[in-house]
Length: 574
Image (cartoon, rainbow, N blue to C red; front, side, top):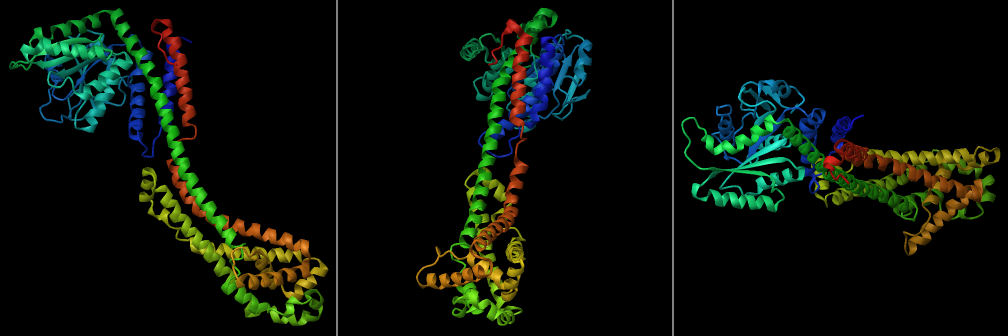
């Protein structure tokens, strides 16, 4: 495979990789990176692919520059015919005009060059239409393109001006004596220097008495910026004749230079190779910039993700802490439990009394409203803790996200993220009730043996399940003073009650499993809430392989460029 074929393949790979360069978050520089990615995509399709595919294709000279610099007048004056209309109103929105020899018309009418523009035979007030003019007096091998203003106040005009300049083999850059030192033109000229683009600079409308001074100063500025090789032409300011054209003598030097490029095949080949090699060389740092920008997007999204995950993980941990540090053995739950079991007779030799109390206990517990009251108290109080933590997690995540501009934008667009979802309270209640059912099944499963079954039946599955919940709540770290003794007594009663039925080791395992089940239920309902944030971030995430795609494309391009240009141009792409 030849070097140019490898280069064409590398451009195709780059073209397919660039859409992965997305910058959804408004980080610093994101807008610039979006513009850069779009610009590179245009450059690949508009210029790099067609030029690499056909080095002998006609050259495209784009005539660009500042507002009111006289680009259209210059083009007409070079051709000695009115082929493009100068804009009268500002901003001027008109279709760019491409003038070529009839022999070259087929190339420029094809979709190989500037494929995103619609071809037209009439100059329209539409910046996305390309007006093609076949002009026999223009030598074959070179086309002129009258582009929009680079500093137009119209965004579409500015964007198209940049796109066309980056699609050019050479630039004819037009400015005026009054504006040649403006910043915008020099931003573009710097790009020409970076791409090693063949460049002619026309400083128009120079006061006749100062033409040498202006030209000398502009030449000095060009040299200071690495553009000493640019061809410089100065045109005096004068009243235009009725045909609106500059005198032939004023444009003779530029006309001759362009004519030589058009008629000398070696000169055209040199321009094409020089511009292509320079453009390829300039791609690598731009691709590195895109890759770094994608990584910053990933990092920013990951930071938001970690904040939301960390907050909901903390909420789950705080529910678990509240369910295990004795906090739940306050108020209503403790009161209902004591009302159910009393504080005296169950504290004395429960194992010995199970048989004697069997009939009494069975009647006492089963169907009693007191059992249901404890269950409801546990459900209501534990669900309230879960709801409170879910509310806090939503609010805290919103606060953390709002500390960055991109996070604020997400919360502003999705204000519901600052509060739990509409169904959260119901889901929290359902999760706690499901846990109570889990505990019931644990007790039932543990009491399947004949001996244990009798004991379970003696006390009732519901009561044993409630006792197991009390044991889960039993630590007294959250209690103080007299609360410790009261809650401790209740938990000891529950512990002894369970041990009398199942044994000490079994009770420990049951309590551990009940704690795990509770954690699972809590984490499950909070995970649904957390998923809302994950879904938003997933919708903003860059393609997972975007960085790798661009890195692969950049490496392929470096290798292909070395092969294509060999030592002749030796572009430094490392």
